[in-house]
Length: 101
Image (cartoon, rainbow, N blue to C red; front, top):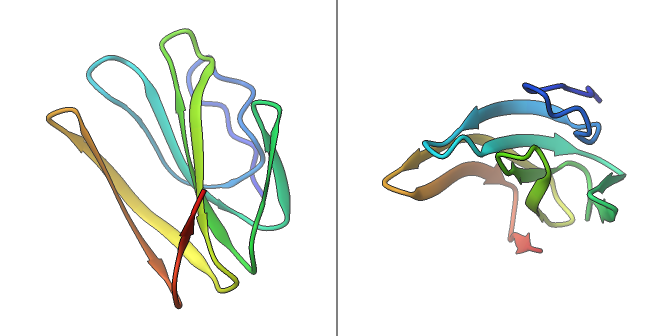
């Protein structure tokens, strides 16, 4: 696992970083994968099987706005995200069905 620092955000969880970027409003998005249990903003997220992926958004104040994990008992991988016209699109892959939290 890799702990990352993006800009002045230093409280990112230990995830395998796939992508990080900002929208037009300077909010930061972080996409990565994790196994086991990680803590984000005081909340614990546990992978449901092997590898799950997670998307976080930090506000302009560098505080966590929200976090969502994607997973099932199989492996899931976030591949990429993009933001266009105030719409966030995330692409990923999974082995079977997926459960959003």
